[in-house]
Image (cartoon, rainbow, N blue to C red; front, side, top):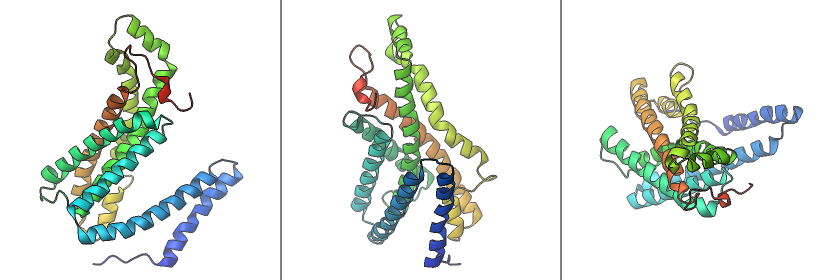
Length: 263
C-alpha cells in the first residue's frame, strides 16, 4: 500500500505547534525563544534542501557523488562537534575529523558488508541514511564526552598534576576523567535502548512501518542499527578524546589552555 503524502495544510498545522513551547518560554521568562525559533527554522530549510539533493543523489546514484556528500557530512559533523564544546576549532578540528572519518568508514563497511550482505556499499539509499544516523549519534556522544573530559580535567587540574608528580603515567592520570566522560556520553543512548519497543518506536523503524514494510523487517533493521550505532558512538568518543589529546597537552603532560575559548 502506497503511503499517503502529508498535504501542505497538514504541514502548516505541524509547524504552528511551535507556538506552544514558545508561549511557555515567554510566560516563564525562559531565554530560549530565539534559539528555539532559529533552530527549527534552520532545520526546516536544511531538510527542504536535503529533499532536493537527496532526490538527485538517489536518482543518479553515482558512487563518487555519494562518497563526496558523505565526506561533506563528516566535515560538518566534526565542525559542529568542536564548536558546540567551546573548544579551539583551529587546534582540535583535524583530530576530530580523523575520529569521525575512521569511525564512520569502519562501521559503514561493517554494516553494509557483514550485516546487510548485499554488496551495495556505495548505494545512496544505504550509504547516506545509515551514514547520517551513525554521524548524528556519534556527534551527540562526542559533544558530551569530549566537552566533559576537558572541562572536568580543567576543574581538577591540581589533582591530575598530583597524580603525575607521584609517578603516574599520563594515561593512568587521565583514566578517571575518560571513564566519566565516556559513561556520560553513552548513558543517553543506553537509556533509549532500554525502553525501545515498549515506551517508544525509534525513527527508522517508524519510517519503515509508515512506508509499508512488514513489522518484522523494520524490527530487524532497527535491532541491527542500534547495535551498530552504540558501538560506533563508543569508538567515536574514544577516538575523539585520544586524537585531540595530542594537541591538548605539552611534552610534560600539562593541559594546554589554548584549546579553551572561554577559559
